[in-house]
Image 1 (cartoon, rainbow, N blue to C red):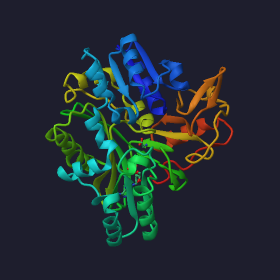
Image 2: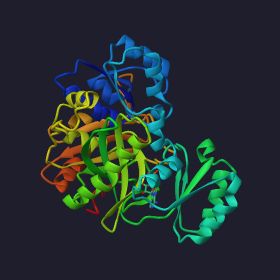
Image 3: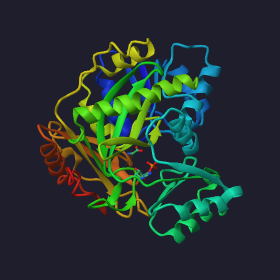
Length: 425
Ligand code: AMP
Ligand code: GLY
């Protein structure tokens, strides 16, 4: 089978590695990919939103499976587009259509979905330019901190958590009146602040059956002790050690099952990954967000723990056999540390030469490339998050130690990483 993966991050490098391990795999293509995917697959110079070029590549390279990494092409309707033009229904597309992608593409849609299907989540109300005064009154009645969410996709920057009431009202105005987040902020969800520990859970589903993948804990803040600005993710561990049997069954019963049933009741077809962003409040899981894709850097700890043949899993997904698929997971935990360009998630420089990756032993750590490229045979930085260094070991502590030891080999100008991933566990 020939497989095409869309995206260019550490997530897509981890997908490519897993796909390549499959006994059913012939060729792996990644569009556009990065310096890491270039080592193990064929990169295609096509952007994730260049639908015509993607359709041509599917024909040219005789692709049987398309795995969509990031959310943007899903929200933009890549699945519907390919299905409407392609008479070849044998192509397996891992990723939902436009309607299903609304679970990530619109916070307002998601909140009403959650309430309609009695899935635990924070209380909320949605406001527009027309009723902003009501929004101010809503804030007046709420306790601090205030959680403001732009309705649409805002490159991960659309959620504001603000302590000061005056500032919260000011920001509501910035989003609704001054279009701080452009069209994504035409509506704003204001919701109750939930206090608890976060966990990322993942399923692969055909909209009817589902398979639960390993869970992870992501470290989103740039600074140690979870301080400073939010990032795409600075590190992750899998499984989260606090995920005991009782919590697992609550998550499946109260959240995963009603989500799949809710999609069915609403007649929303869904084939792909669902990423449940949860907060555990006094032992009860609540949904903060859905994503219609895998997480990054979560994939870099979840995928190395999957022992089963990944393309066999995809065939089970396509043929309605997910329930009977015996998914084998490695008992050893995994930890990843993300190396970023100094200044990220604000302004940072790129084109810094990366040294030392060859000194990392393959038996110790996986090196997943993200914002990295090869230029004139030289490996250089090309983004904010540059590399994710993942290790597996008998315990999370040992896995973290292995990754931190491997990082000692790596260098680039203004390299930064958190030295406290797992500090709270
Ligand atoms: P999101 O972009 O929806 O993932 O939100 C970004 C981050 O904001 C989440 O990972 C949480 O840490 C935080 N967050 C979002 N909603 C809430 C909430 N209702 N209460 C507390 N924290 C939240
Ligand atoms: N690491 C969080 C995300 O992928 O959205």
